[in-house]
Image 1 (cartoon, rainbow over the protein chains, first blue to last red):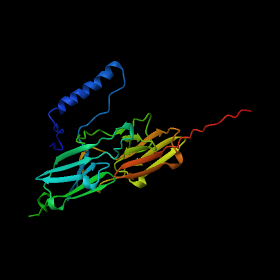
Image 2: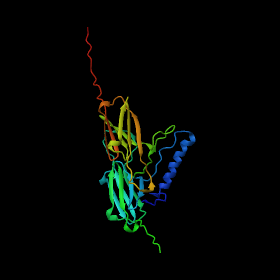
Image 3: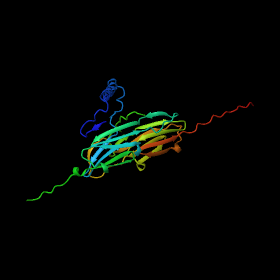
Image 4: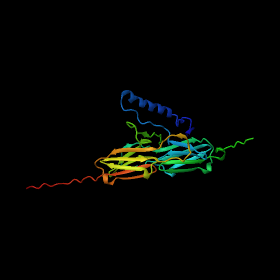
Length: 153
Length: 132
């Protein structure tokens, strides 16, 4: 399970991830040296990409998940770790189709994020719209900003 | 299928010269496959709804473009940003065997599906030669 603090680089998902990354980098080097086509597409190895933001009352986590329906998704909260899990299935699996181009990725995904503050786990809502998942996490009362009035003596 | 999705960055369009429109432009990832009747193009456009989509077919060139218009509420502080909104655009040259009058497109969950039916091949006709 990947656990990502906002400030950290993502932890390697599997023990070979670093090696694979190295291999990819080497693969990218060769064509550069010999003047061939420039590097293959960059693979970021974290899926789905997330945007995290907050306001006074809520934390918002948005994920780019095109082609994912609500029932393909599982969202868990455990302590202050939120996990998004799911599977993206290929739409066409007809024997008679032949592919010209295959750039989309299909398969399982799972990503965990450490939340910056305590949240009210019972009031979390999640919504998928046009392939963007928005999770709204209301902050726990004690984590909300409070203004303290200064009294003059 | 048990493979894990590795994730890939959105490809940004590198334009020659100064851009004249605001926002970023991306090349959507596509799957193109065909069977005996149709060619199907599937493009990944997260954040694009039905009303933000423009599909053009002009002189045998199919252009798909869409604006990802999602945005947060006001007064949000960004803590982490791994993807950006912007405009998706990609062009395809269609083969002559495509029936350009009957191209159909649908979008759901940020996935655009364009169906391009093939023209029925002309049936071979046998011409009998008569002797004069």
